[in-house]
Image (cartoon, rainbow, N blue to C red):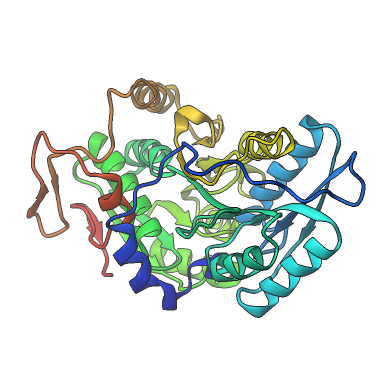
Amino acid sequence: MLMHRIKEFIPLLLLLAAVFVFCGCGTDKAVQMEEPADAEELKVGFVYVGPVGDAGWSYAHDQGRLYLEENVDGIVTVFAESVLEGPDAQKVMIEMVEQGCRVIFATSFGYMNAVINVAEKYPGVIFEHCSGYKTASNVANYFGRMYQPRYLTGIAAGMKTESNIIGYVAAFPIPEVVRGINAFTLGVRSVNPGARVHVAWTNTWYDPPLEKETALGLLDLGADVIAQHQDTPGPQQAAEERGAWGISYNSDMRDFAPQATMTGPVWNWGPYYVDVVKSVMDGTWERHEYWGSMADGIVDIASFNDNVVGEDIKEAVLGARELILSGELKIFDGPINDQNGDVKLPEGASMTDGEKLSFDWFVEGVVGTL
């Protein structure tokens, strides 16, 4: 997914992320929406970079679409799956508008420029872009603080490992992924300072065989827990085949590896989609940059797999979860060292959102390179 975050964009993203801070409030006056062909029905489009059956990123967004349909009357939704970034995405969005869509959710970073181009052509249509940083009078962006549940799953992994070698199958070395690895590792080492997180890059978001093969390589190194920032259950299935344990991502993947998957950070897009569409319908939608938290419900951890998770792990994870929700535990507060042991954030200091959004270094305990 997110070749939604293809490498050409990385330098610019790093530059802008350093000064860009997401917020949950609107910044512009409400946009006047064009009337749909059927004034009694609002048509909402969703553009996905992967198949809705990937059990990962696109699946999670599509669950949000279904939630929207179930909770808002007077709408109809359509979606396009496996849409490539670039001209293909722009073409799909134009087709959606011409077919009557008046709200479009583009769910891949690599759709960003296409969104801006199409939005300029259709100023009365509302566009919401997931994980990007550009906005316009009729374009907002949105994302979630996935690093919070990543930290919690790190606690579970740190308590479960026996070899103190934890594998992490990662897509691309970009700030979003690095931020997740770091949060996960901080969670691991909060309960098990001797554990190490070994990172292996796939340079893909959706490649089931490669994801599984990469996980097997980490298991060959002695890892007994496999975490992932990938879109398919391949790494979880590799862990199950080897009698190891897993931390999934995007959705609850335990059905694919019921003897391995412990839990995983998950997305819950539905309530956000409901809020946005309702604001469009009542004329209060405004441009915004949203980076929601676990307290908002947009991110969380999946329920525990009782096959492999003991009460001690549940208690530790749920206790930390309450501290995050209360604001008492902030993941990226100092002291934090980098992987060389040098102090990057002294005690008493807190990382800004801009610093979190531009992560280009690993914390202590990560084994891997950027």
